Length: 266
Image (cartoon, rainbow, N blue to C red; front, side):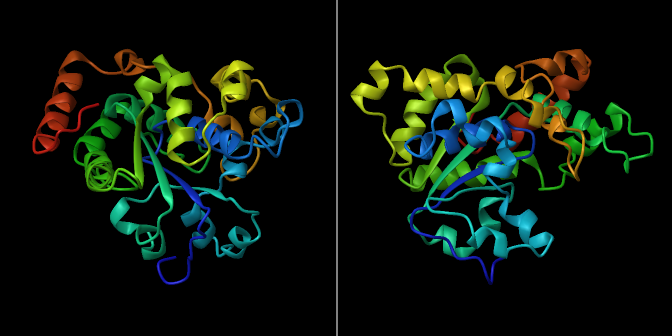
């Protein structure tokens, strides 16, 4: 991927650690970028999972299907879970926009544990306590969550025109504001007429958890990663149903320590 991938000038990248609101942000970014191309009544998101509309770059290289990325029409919206330091130079050296979403680590862990244990190939016991210890040690598919968010956050401080940081909890409270700011950032601002006609609200509704989860395409249980695996609760604070106060305190203290040299807070 480092050697071959070439970004296009109009590309927009959606980056995140796993289970941080990726599916939601992909849907919103795709809908905002292509709102002049599709009507809401016949939108691709009504027939395709957001991950089909916004493919994850590294997955296509892992399956040796990278040529598919070249067939996508411009402007492309592409996703990634890799850390900033592992992005291809063609992305880092370009003027392409990167929208990064992060989420409170305790909720990330709970969501990731639920997803992993759904897979049929994962046929061994994997208690939450074990997942918790691995998470605290940073032994995760894309590395420690704190390193991941700090790389993107630090780069956003130095280059705010390139990287925008969104927080899942803030988006949940005020999705309208988050979508307007994202549209401005990626160079697709809403016009006064669009705002007056409720286009922002319509996009937020199209991409809402309840709307997407209830679509037939997202009830599908087939494929390497069944579409229904991407939709569980989408609530803030669900960790309280799985962690003891002692576990929550331990993870909070680790998070506090890992972020101590930064101005970033969840």
